[in-house]
Amino acid sequence: MGIGQRISRAWRHVSSSNADATRAFPETTLGAISEAITAGEQTHRGEVRLIVEKGLPLDEAWDGVTNRQRALALFADYGVWDTEDNCGVLIYVNLAEHKVDIVADRGIDRKIDSSTWQAVCRTMTDGFKAGQFHDATLAAVKQVNELLRTHFPANGSRANELPDKPLML
Image (cartoon, one colour):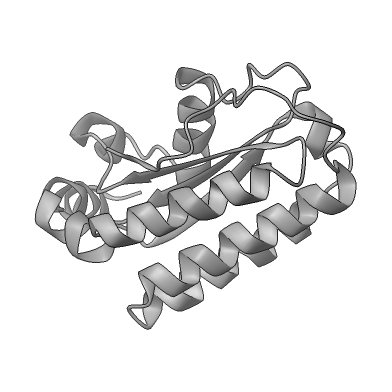
């Protein structure tokens, strides 16, 4: 990546504001997503976590950290990997680049291939292009819940291991 591209990318991330994030994901949207995650987790053994980041930290944007690398780091940092059944799924949204990545723990990753996750990501990014953050995110959460219900159906009550409320960074 050339110096001009690095400057442009770093500026895009640094100039992303909390106001931009709030416009894309207002409290009503965050509440609806939280409810969808909670309802879905009643039907499967997965643990779904949504993290929305307005933009990468400056050093990471400058260094060329990819969306996938950032998603993997957050997957670890927020303990999405640390569920009893290895059933955590992180949906990571980078608002500065309108990119989405999904990281699934090893228990889930063995049964659901990357092309399926990429299709879920496209649901979101296509909606984001049209400014439909609310509907696109809820549609993607619904797809994730359906995949988990198919491959990891509920087998009785269990503890909720990860917060259902989306995390805004």
